[in-house]
Length: 493
Image (cartoon, rainbow, N blue to C red; front, side, top):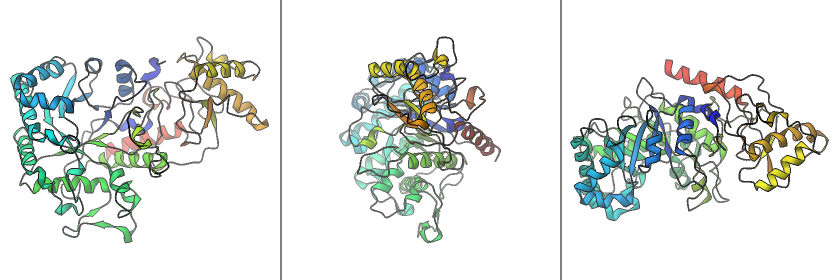
């Protein structure tokens, strides 16, 4: 159950998600392969609560576009791969698509870009001959509706179309796509649009056979003996992310095009993986995302284009649990669908573990009947103090069994674990070091004695749900203060 307290910030570092006055911005990709997707209006509330100013949709969902109306959020809509062929073959189909999915929502919904397909050249290569035609048809439809200056058309491509991205100075696009790439770049140049790049250092590292150190993929400082240098330009690369962006710039330059800016439309790091995916971890994901945000908001470009900031969209807002493939494929989100943060991030670019406070909360997805039994036992024989979850009290909302069970379980655990009480409740509970308090609802054991409203509210504002037992554990109020200071400093500097 989702309540109005969604207007309080839940993902701590996202207070930095704004259009930086100096140029760079961060945005968020919103995938929808999610079992329990929040309603569009609730989703927009969480975006606004975290001051996320740019989003990328993978389609042009009418409910989502309507919910984004008058939100001030800049929206990139998507033409699905299934729609590319029809739009490329028929200008009338393209015009209909623009009228239905763009023109009818503007200007109240601030649509600024159209992503045509998703990694078409590598995922659906048979559409390559029609791709630029689809882009042209859409652009002409925008011209006809006088929206071509407000809405840019481009197409996201993966790093896989650059076979040898290092050293960046010698990188080129796969020659089998030369004709398509030339047409694409000519279109971007003629329409003053930008190149959309999906760049994943996670895959660059895990598929790299140990060539590059993990620190390089996570933006961590490299020792002098491990410096990454392009032997042709002598440019030093402090991160794989910068090298990927530069490899793309050099690949564009190889076609004798200049002045085409790159926007990273996807990047991120999975926080959980299977037994054969050890690098998909909470710590690595938090480190990558935190360092990525700091890197982008310094408003500089890669070594070959230092004055061109790298606007970037993080993949992704929620975990897409319905996606197929390895475990990691389902675990790229920075938020759970109840609004709680998957991993809080510290301004020191690392996860610290100094807190000794352990909380007991209900497991996400636990059987509701078992949760109700556990709740009744905790508030009855377990002698937990359940006054705060009574109607009208500070922890009553969200009014859900899971939220109430979390509060009751924790109150029991805080009082009884020192004398043998456990956090189990028939398998419906788990321990976490992340403070589940939210708004004015203070969980027993919380070290946060006072809270402010708005952007400095704690994580888990939609009900306490833990990512994993023993997760990240920097005290929430401490994170908020540090991150807010870091955001202000970034702007001032």
